[in-house]
Length: 97
Image 1: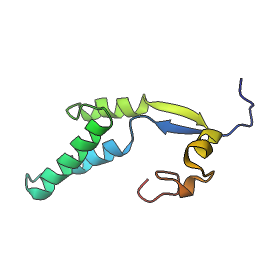
Image 2: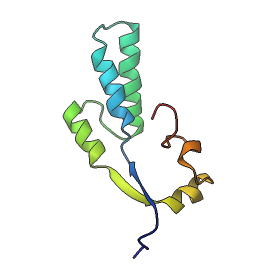
Image 3: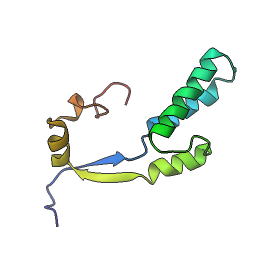
Image 4: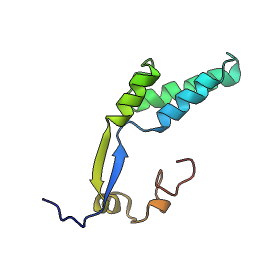
């Protein structure tokens, strides 16, 4: 059992950025170079994360929400060498999060 004072972070195994990438692609209704690039960005990222890019938006949202895991704060320090979320990729203070 872990001590109550051990800080924990919630992470998603399926990143939330997939939903944002999909929404950008869906919002751009033209099938031009930009539209194709937006869909490719989404589909390649989905495949990289092990997600079928053809799932519906609702299924994708459910996959993301169902992929949450709580990690002890100390595991971030061990894996990244830093204890501040602002200095790690995708941390609370990172741009684009």
